[in-house]
Image 1 (cartoon, helix red, strand yellow):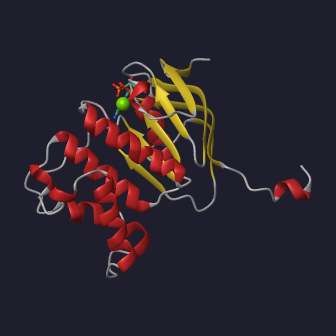
Image 2 (image 1 turned 45 degrees about the vertical axis):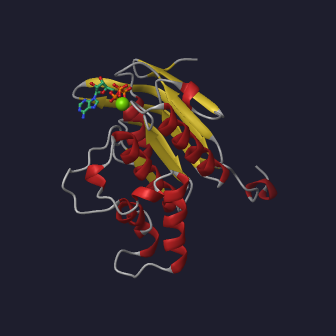
Length: 219
Ligand SMILES: Nc1ncnc2c1ncn2[C@@H]1O[C@H](COP(=O)(O)OP(=O)(O)OP(=O)(O)O)[C@@H](O)[C@H]1O
Ligand SMILES: [Mg+2]
């Protein structure tokens, strides 16, 4: 590589190469390659137990690979929305509180919110069409409303790498459309997004697809 090409901007945010992961003595990922690029949506599909959530855990740095190479662009800010997130029913937090928590990663929790962060929270709540419910305790939301609140929290984080595990599973058409639009906002803002799904048709547009079967990438 010439010195000039080394200075070219790269869109590669995450590269996984030849990844093996064993869980409970069983291979969960075998020789998996995956790449996430800034401004692109990578959709991960495959049957139950094929290793999709395991792949996101490796990408998030929550699980280490037994073999292979994980390369992340320096200073990458990552966020993960896990599969079917439970929220305690009596959690004394409103929708606005939960979304505002997304700004903490950048602010430091001890500092007061800046105007820009408050505006970003308001805008994200509007983007997921929860403005009327902004003061409601999150424990009182329906499943679809809760998932939209969590997506708003993801939006305000301005992460470079966004990992979404079945973000639309079990939701109605309206909530799915709102979440699909939020994902499109994330890629338009330059984030690399990896989303797991059983139904690729639920996304507005897809840039790359990775199909897993029994822990292996299907060509
Ligand atoms: N916490 C865990 N401890 C041990 N084994 C696990 C754990 N989580 C997943 N596994 C195993 O790892 C393999 C891959 O599971 P994974 O959750 O990644 O699949 P998935 O593709 O996300 O499935 P689903 O569509 O059901 O969410 C499976 O054999 C599963 O039993
Ligand atoms: Mg899963």
